[in-house]
Length: 233
Image 1 (cartoon, rainbow, N blue to C red):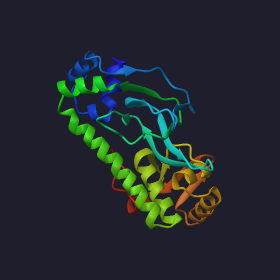
Image 2: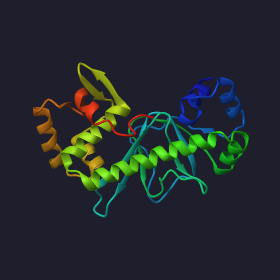
Image 3: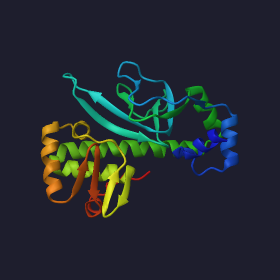
Image 4: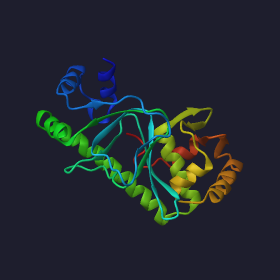
């Protein structure tokens, strides 16, 4: 029953009845893993995973390395998200590193299993396409921010995006439920830690953000002004 509950939390299955989810589980199309510990590399750029993967619990970071070893974060996956590669379907995760940010629980589906599920449940194809479209829109938004805006605006956009996905509102601020150091924020923006620290200090003086060790809070008024197109899923 616990396994069925986790399946119901995955984005493409969330509107299905318990009986429908039970039927999908009985098709034996999904393989469930044990818990993966924090800071584990699930995939490297040289060893792409085959199949589709579903995040049942936890958070994973997708990132690339440049020639000098500097990281650039492409995205953060959390419960209900999908990643992986099939010959017929790709979430754009080849040649990227995927690392757990906290203890995480995954399940997977091979290409033959995916094809069997699509035959049995063709209506799910639209949900897979919607999940893929959301991912592509996020990448497009990310590239637009990098190309067109300065660091301060990009930083506010990033914090708004993270607040929309992982935020908890309290006392006029949204606490982002992620361990965020200035270095990690810099990795997400393709900037230096020193530059990010300077802008964060400026925003703190303006009461736009509050920071403590590995935590960031963003003023709700700023969040409302900067809600990105794809901050909710």
